[in-house]
Image 1: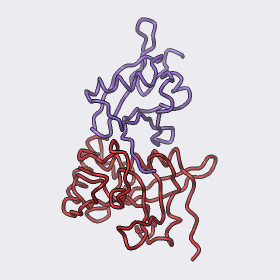
Image 2 (image 1 turned 120 degrees about the vertical axis):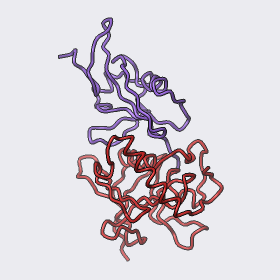
Image 3 (image 1 turned 90 degrees about the vertical axis):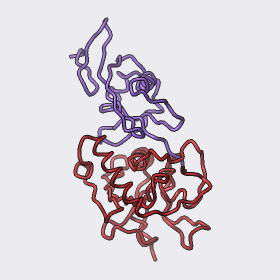
Image 4 (image 1 turned 180 degrees about the vertical axis):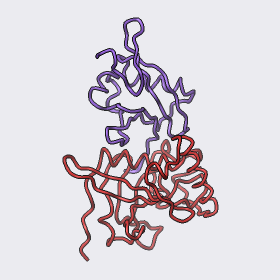
Length: 106
Length: 176
């Protein structure tokens, strides 16, 4: 059932494009937002929209991540050009998205 | 405000308050008691024990225990150390096999880090979200400095993210 593609929420179609509900948490500010994104949107576009929805400014240290199938946080920074659909197919974003804080110390 | 050129000042009373505040903030954020939900344990009034796992491809999970200790006010992150799960402590080389190997741009685990500010080598989870990183005056990019609004969730998330993507197995047992 292709119309039921979903990322943590019910999907629907508007104007022939598939929308999905995404859930975003900002770990530093401890804020949350839910909004609908197009499956053809890139991860970069969803990340950018998250700041608008959260009402929080992006900072240099921010990291865009999602939990993998084991629930472990996994950076999406090397996959920002993927569409939501592709990222889901690869198992990169089955759960909520998070804006985490990058750290230094290597 | 944390700095790459100033060592942290201990304030144990403030650390106790930070832990209580951060646990409440975590409960509000996650919508439930995180200690119960994630199998964390309190250790005294300033400590938190957090089970973590590392997994090499096609191998079983390795279990580790992270101890966070809150010893300052909000301007510094908590102390973070991997510990022996039987003692909840790390005594140096004899316990090094309780450490994961992590080498990433964000986090690197040293079993024995020599610092001119310490008489003995220390375990260093080299990460700008741990107290030890500032205590050894490691230095780094100011963009990653700990912020007074940060909580231990930042520390934990950075270590978990590094364990997921840059885990290199368990440190070997030290032969005396």
